[in-house]
Length: 109
Image (cartoon, rainbow, N blue to C red):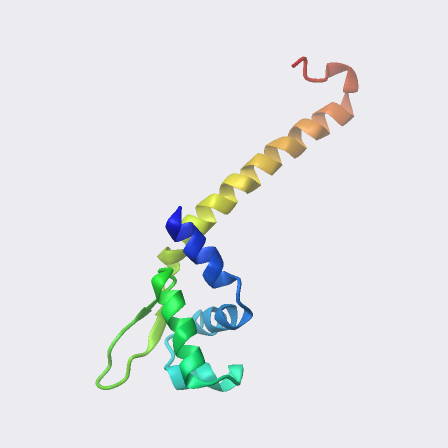
C-alpha cells in the first residue's frame, strides 16, 4: 500500500503530471523538462526525486547526462487498484440495470 500512496501523492501535483506526460514521449534531461514548466532547476529536481521514489520514472546515464525515462511498470499498482474500483462500479451498474429492467425481480437480500 505504501507504493500506492507514493504513486498517488506523486500524481497529485500538476507539474509532476506534466513531467510524466513529457516523458511518455521519450527520455529527457532536467533542462528539457524544466523549460516548459517555467520553474527552477532545483524544483524540477525535487519533483523528479519524488517521481523516482514512487517508482514512476528512472534515471539513466549517458556520458555526463542523466536523462529520465518513464517506467510504465511503475504504474501497475495504481492501475490494478483503479481496475478493481472500475470492476466494482461496473458490477453495481449491471445490477442496477437489471433491477430497473424488472423491479419485481429485485435482489432478495
